[in-house]
Image (cartoon, rainbow, N blue to C red; front, side, top):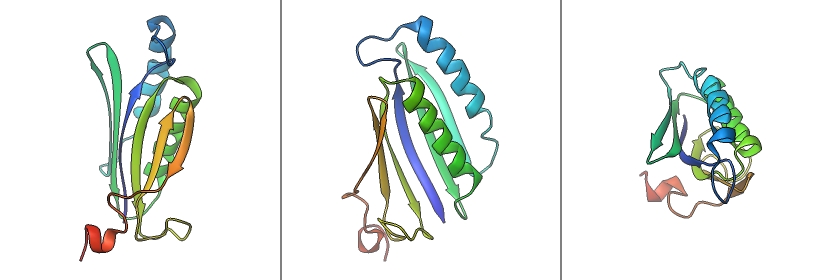
Length: 131
């Protein structure tokens, strides 16, 4: 089982967005999003009150192409939309590296950087969310 849930607020810089530079990046991001054609993955890009928001959800039997596309989208945002910020939680029951198969990994994006953080809220899955 592989699952991922996350949200990102999309901004082209950390001070004030410039739609002249933001809009072309959003168009490129949309072409990546259009690759998400699986029934196990949902990617939504929504404008709310003049700001773009991205949500990504995956629920698949195992980690495969959906996870690679989510990583590609996240890296695109970090590389081209440096004011963006958000959080992605993922869990892979076949993960051998830390945090292991019984825990969520949290990736935080801020100021063009992707950082892995420990998860205190849902991990370890047993006993916090599973019997």
